Amino acid sequence: MLAGYSEKKKPLGGYAVLAGLFTLALGSAVASAETADEELPELSWSDLLLLGVATHKLSRIVTKDLVTSPFRAPFVKFKKSAGAGEVEEEARGEGIQEAVGDLITCPYCIAPWVGSAFVLSAERAPRATRTVASIFSVVAVSDFLNGLYARMKD
Image (cartoon, rainbow, N blue to C red):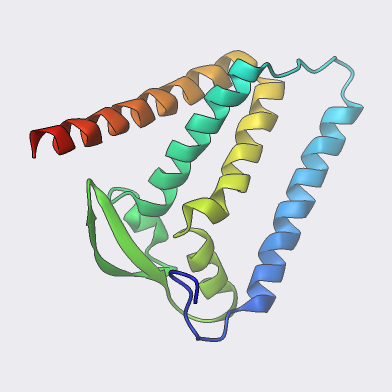
């Protein structure tokens, strides 16, 4: 059995709604970008790396951070502290409520949403997006160094 996957029946209808919303939003944003008069900038490999690290960090903040738990509360229930300012939660309710709970407690599941927002923002407002992505990337490096320091100290 997959880690974190239970035998409980999953809210497939809710997942379909979320997948449809994601597809509609992404398709609309891409279509809008394609019909814009101005030429959109291309992303360099360094941009993709920056946005990738920022997506990783922001996905963890959205899905696991203790301080963002009030935003997840309508859809999840607290299980336990996971250390390093993170929590373990599980979806509650049924249907769309449970599907949203699954989405917002899984950093792998939310990453396409966050990554899409970063890439599309980078196309429209490259300087502002680079600044925001840089902040989250710096925090990710800091987290890595904090973890390394803690291990070395033990």
